[in-house]
Image 1 (cartoon, one colour):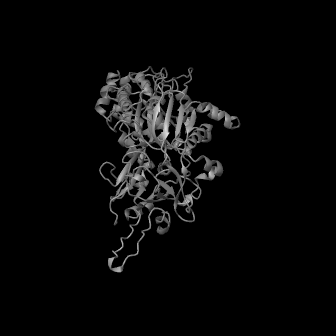
Image 2 (cartoon, rainbow, N blue to C red; image 1 turned 180 degrees about the horizontal axis):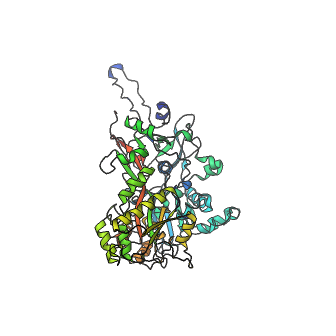
Image 3 (cartoon, rainbow, N blue to C red; image 1 turned 30 degrees about the horizontal axis):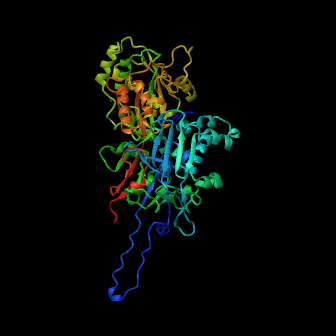
Length: 586
């Protein structure tokens, strides 16, 4: 099943227990007393305490969903992928892989791995971070095969299906997924300890983005085989990222991360210890943040409407890879009219929707004017593409569609799933469109059905359906992939060129969709990002096709102390290795 969905105390730790793994002990040489200088005190390690809100139920990388914020934060800091996505720049950086190259047909990718990134663990007895062994190509191969065996939730493995044989293996019952069959079928091979070759089922220039996702971050083959599901427990786990896990704290009480002294990549930050707690009720952690005891907290629901995310640096919205938008049915009049679709988009006040519906429901959001969320690889700068709320232009577009003042405008049905938030969003949209466009009551109508029924209508609308399917359908979507290509091609693209696109809108291909197909062979990431932006403009610019009406990006809201420079700034999981505490005397 694809990744669409229906909406539905600080850790107590003795400081001394945390300091020893990362703080070297000063040594001295005996000299005559008269020549002995005053000893230089060893600085305390830089420690921050944070509360990330809802608990992380697991930290196995292949089981992490796109909107599991705390789990994504932990995986980002504990496990390194072959590549790494900088969610503020939208660029892919090297990680475990130092370099990569592709074959002429774009189907074979060869990655050279660093030999200085190790699996590490903190010894329970000594408290020291220990190197276990280097990460090898066999760890990568094991991880890919593990994912393709559908041990991950099937809604999460979609991105891995671009690897040759992965889909074939995932569709088999476990009894038929023998080691020999999987090894022969899945297109991944360890040439030596530091060389991995992937074979893809189809061209996919965005493949480095897939490898940056939690799904395919290498796991230690020997540890997972030996410990099974228990391999992620704090007293057992091996990690490979810029931090290791303190072993003597139960996960239900939180996590303490200790800087990995063997991490070879450059650190932009100075934070050596991160104490993480989780709270269902954020009121108490927020009070602790206001008192200066916590560096960062998830903002309580009742605080969302009272802060300014644009003007106050203490509060920040971090966009998640999920979005709500309205899909237009081209086989239902008048939504086959481009001016009608533009009129509805221009009549949508996204900020009002966020303030009046989302925030009272405890859901932060960022107004969406295009489809690719900030934080995606190749994403345009937020606000550069798309049009916002413009009542006058909306009424002009309505007149251009032939329905000035809503005269002769046929009834338009908005279909939503039966979750409470979807119904609230749908009701406010119907009211908003009627008011802005000046339509009498009843022209815009709300209808709700089960999520399964909506999926059928979207994916494979019955040919015999009478009356036609609703003209507008509200859809909430979590990313299957963190690349802009996914948002432009896999969800609403025309079926003639993209037969596997999720929503069958019954629409002809628009200008630019052939160019979208060509990005699959465009290896230059800057050139590919430029193409994505051009295609977005063709879809969502002032003269764009407007096949869907973007509403808002799902987000997380956090409060940050003024003495902490936290990264990222706009989207994605927290990067503790880039955090800088500016006031060490606080």
